Image (tube, rainbow, N blue to C red):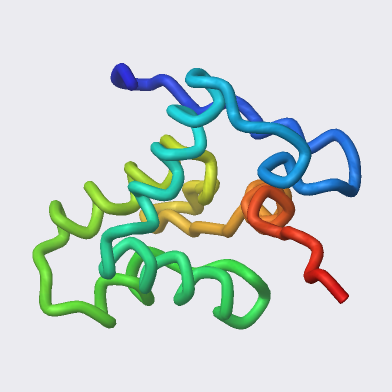
Length: 119
């Protein structure tokens, strides 16, 4: 993924899990793998959880950095990775940046992994 490039939607088109319907093609698997790779880092997973569970569904970068014993540039890197794969959006307000989880992206991941349980 190049600088400034964002992830395309995963395109869940119906109620059946894409994994149960047919094997993923190489392009789709690579796209999904980048999202899961971003979530594979414990710091990024915690950041996403902090943002998603924060009051009002958004968190200021100051709320995020205070939860870690990491430098601000390191937190910024993790936030950028989450934004690049489409899991977070951000909005600058004065001198602070506020982050929100992208519910549609999280729903796409959930739908992708949802396989009907056999009776």
